[in-house]
Image (tube, rainbow, N blue to C red; front, side, top):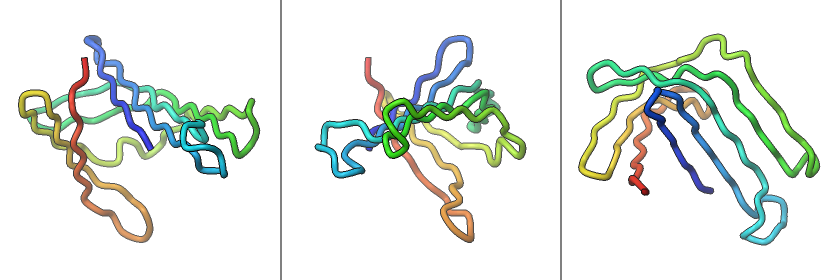
Length: 112
């Protein structure tokens, strides 16, 4: 699984997730790709992503499958705290995998 988080100068964001080899494919073949488009708002050491759309391509449903979500009622769920250390961005936020929220920590390295 790969992730790429893009923040543009105007505050527009793209959060890419790519998974490979999920359906018996080779490890190099894309199985699923999703992109969450939105805008970022920052206040102190917290930020919120306000989503515009989530576009998903999933090979499980066929090579032309494309799903677009535009209803984000209830978002943003929580703010994300962040710390910047030279070229490393450390995020803390809540995920909701099952019956209770879990505090999650993610480390992103800047690539130019």
